[in-house]
Length: 114
Length: 113
Image (cartoon, rainbow over all chains, first blue to last red):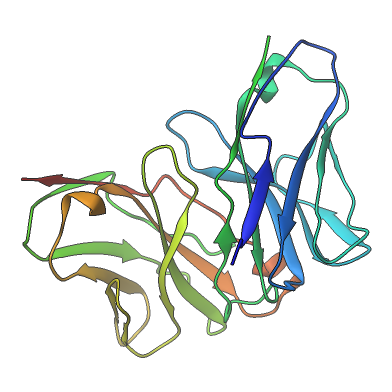
């Protein structure tokens, strides 16, 4: 099983550029989420989705957009990259968004904004 | 959101048991106790979770206090590969935003050969 797949693994952007981080899962999970992790820190929630067509903001949503047109895909868009968005980004999914279910994480995208 | 408290770091010797504590004094009745670990340069990995009873799987055991205000992740024989940051997180069973995992800084486990 592929699980949760994130692309690209590494990306360098210039300030002001836009890009999309891709996340796909093949487990038919309803719940998906995006986190960022800064050096020496825990993960912080950016956006999440409880099903196709439904998204909501997490703890640090500013500067990011998401959409969920299919169950499988949950892309994260940076509209105008800033150096403060330099971080490692993780996508996660679970069958539902309830405590009974465990989360599966992707391997991450390391983003540098110059 | 209910919070958890973990020691910043712990050390263990290879092939010895490791007990990683977690306090969650404000836990509610619908909160599941989740443990994840993050190996260097990797995404978090699920370890174990439980509600009230102790749980065992191939990776670890989870011991939950009777009042549920604390729990302990037990690695029965630590290996060098177990060196990681371990996160104890509460996940509410309601779904929606209440099902989001809120990460703290976790416990960095070092394993000495």
